[in-house]
Image 1 (tube, rainbow, N blue to C red):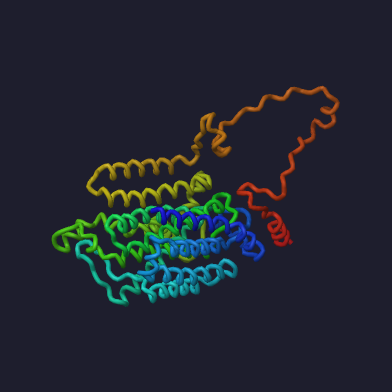
Image 2 (spheres, rainbow, N blue to C red):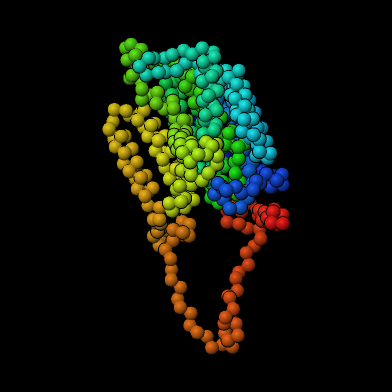
Length: 442
């Protein structure tokens, strides 16, 4: 666990430290697209955050390769090299799309090629545990098609949910944290070395998201763009493929009886194999609703609109930050609820806790305008919007000469430094932004 935590911290530190310079590079390169009708932000924001995330991935793999307890992952398996090859390809496609807006079909082809590169190097699904049937071995073509489909669906699901500041990176971080706990349990508790690559991938993915989140939280100073969303989607899919199609369920040796009975008994253990797909639950529901809505209105299913789930949360009165936190809550409930059920499937307490938390989530959805107020002693630790309002004392009329002629004038405002904004102190973005706005108005 110590080596995994060290890898996670190094990945997060490299991603965090590189995001500031990458933001300045994105501004200089002009990777600041104009605001579209469906966008939530109100000023052009640089993309290309995936550059910092990719170098964080490289740093995490490099550190893990030099750690004594994790070096065997690179010696006994070719999966880390397969992941790095596919990630490099999908990252290059994303960088080009962030800058030049590549056609959707070209991006889809690139995603399939990246998945094919991983399959050629051994990162593929070999068998599937199917409840009621048992462990089903797949042919080479079946495994390849299933692997490519899983990679493409996960990449586009993560890209689809990337609509609010910090939403995609936070939801992927939650899903990867739950999956890390499950994969580590399989690797450490049962001594199955085939689960080590998936555990390493989940730890690195957590580090990438945690390092990028401080720059991407509302108000975001940089977006990950397709170079980041497709990258973390591919790593998430690679983790699922590694442990689902590589770890033989019979190696657990915790069930007895026929294959059919063992598979039924192992159902709670098989459920977390789908943990990386929990990120798709909310986006897929949004995708289905969007297709139905656009088709019903006589529009193309691919036409962009402002009817997505995060748009609706904003329309009913939730703030930007609260809408993101609500979707975090549901993602964590699905991921960790599934994990808890797999560990204690016979306990009713897990089900009761999930039901209670679901009720709390529904209440939060129905209270968009409720703003909690922190107690007096904690006001210095919370944002200003959660502090109690203090009524200013009425100003007494002044009889000084200065209050006569200048009484109708507006009070003098304190000047705002040009190099500071409200997100974080990594530098200003007003210079390029002002020039861009001046050019567009003319």
